[in-house]
Amino acid sequence: MEILKVSNLKKVYGKKIIFTALNNISFNIDEGEFVGIMGPSGSGKTT
Image 1 (cartoon, one colour):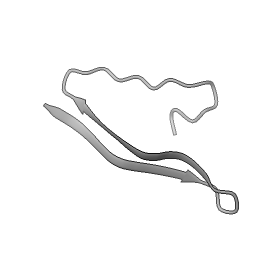
Image 2 (tube, one colour):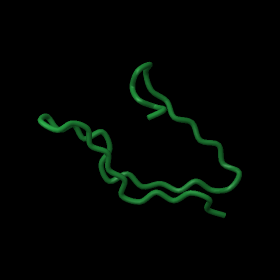
Image 3 (cartoon, helix red, strand yellow):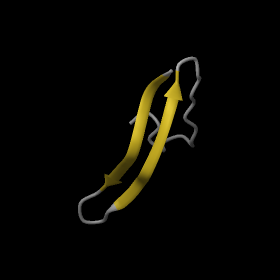
Image 4 (tube, helix red, strand yellow):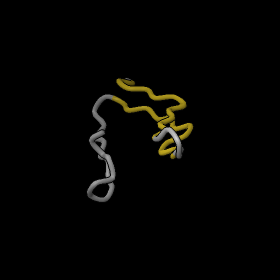
């Protein structure tokens, strides 16, 4: 059973200089699945 569905997620930072962090990201998380987010310190994993 699907408990989270993300479709076409986009995240852009900046005003004068635009940085696209995520573009067209889609995924599903099903009941019972474990998900981890990995990245270097300071990369914005909790943002």
